[in-house]
Length: 173
Image 1 (cartoon, rainbow, N blue to C red):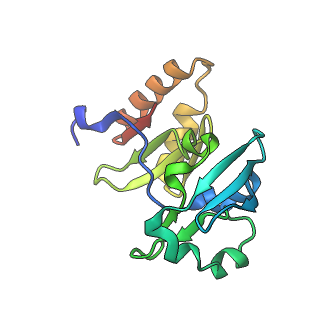
Image 2: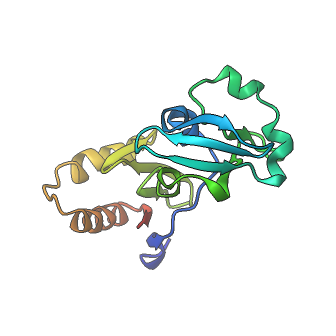
């Protein structure tokens, strides 16, 4: 991987893992009332207020199947297994999802090994999530000690440190 390819700023792209909607969904969205066969009045629990959720026509069949959601009460009521890709999940109200969902990004950086495999993520403001021992060691020795509160400067320094260590970084705005 060349120096130029080792970093890029990108718009966040969801991988359809569903984890955000599995762990925080029910804490964010509560269905108050069914309005029509596709429309629901919902409450945004954290930020307050209501919104109208509309199940997209292409997801009506999978939305009617609730056994997986019933077994997982922490899930967002509108999350369903992807109909064609095992292990992937879809938001059945994606076009009418509330602002809290529209602005959510599960990570601020994805970190890749030289062969292109994703080996880590930066979640929250500055928390590394990885199973890669070499990346963890690099982070603890070189990134964790960084003393700046300026997020732009911190991100720039992290990208440089990881690049020198042979990692590629995709950072999200």
